Image (cartoon, rainbow, N blue to C red; front, side, top):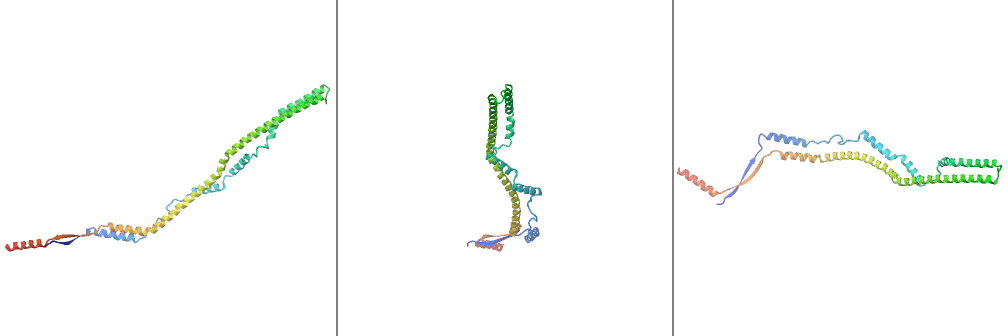
Length: 258
């Protein structure tokens, strides 16, 4: 006779000493699962302090209004580059007068000397006197012309140098407009940064409320599956009926023999 398998079930239960604690833990987990968790009641970011708000506002106002010196400097430089100061120097006459004093004195002395000489010679109004006076006048006129020409040339050359320098500085002076724009942008980014913090705080609160049931269930199931619990296993045992019968007959024969 062939052997036939038989199912044998083994049951392992929780230690009786642990059962009250396991039950208490699962009951507590069920109680916590039934509660609704709350998010942190106030904002979770640091807002702008009063000095920071005042600084941002001042930065914004200054960037919006700009520096009053910039337009004036740009206008002045524009006039310089355009040649506005190449002619009509208001101080030219004063400089010319100081530079021609020596020529004027020399002319007066020459005229007085010519008159004196003519008077002493008894030839006032003569052709010689007129020639002497004419020569003194021509010398004086040449001196004035040369002085005026030198002063005008110096004034023109100086102003042309300033004109060239103003043209070279024009790009950097024009860049000051963008400095105000950049400052305004920094102020705007400062305000946006704090607004982003507030928005992220609201998003975190929303997500926490939306995910609270799922998180609570996952935590509860973790408690349940992590608690000690019994187990049941089934195994198959093979038995030989013929061997068992022979064994039983031998046992019986032994008893009868006794």
